[in-house]
Length: 29
Image (tube, rainbow, N blue to C red):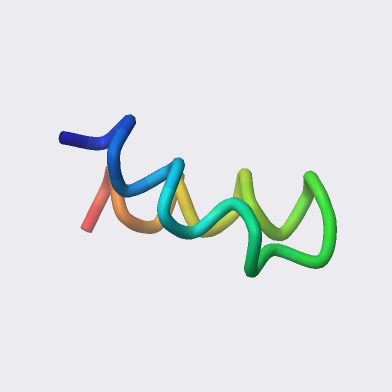
């Protein structure tokens, strides 16, 4: 699920903006 992906990648994110951009790219991919 998206939530599981979010959890697994959050620790690697350097900032909230980067995390949001990654989620948006994944969501709209």
